Length: 132
Image (cartoon, rainbow, N blue to C red; front, side):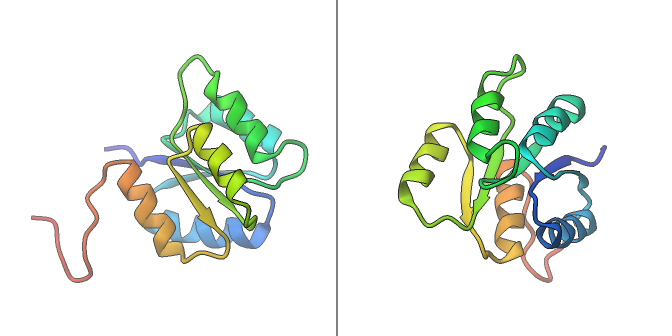
């Protein structure tokens, strides 16, 4: 089976590199975009299985990216929004726009991995457990 593709859209190089390292060790193919416009272009070009999207970015915010993704001909790509923003109105709007999960930074990378696996419908193994 081909590796599932995850599009990371974030302008923070440290976040990108740490998430990319973990996701690639989990077997995902990772595509990176460093602003909202590049994220939209990559979503169309790569047709990822899932998007991890930062809310606050240059050129186009995560909300504007979500608004565009909702109207694409192929339908919404499953998206997890990550943000340092504390506002509950932001979360409510993100959920209205169709995000599958909403994580506040800083978050444990394992929490993000569990969310990705759940959304993609992949079996999550407990530590020490093996596939039968």
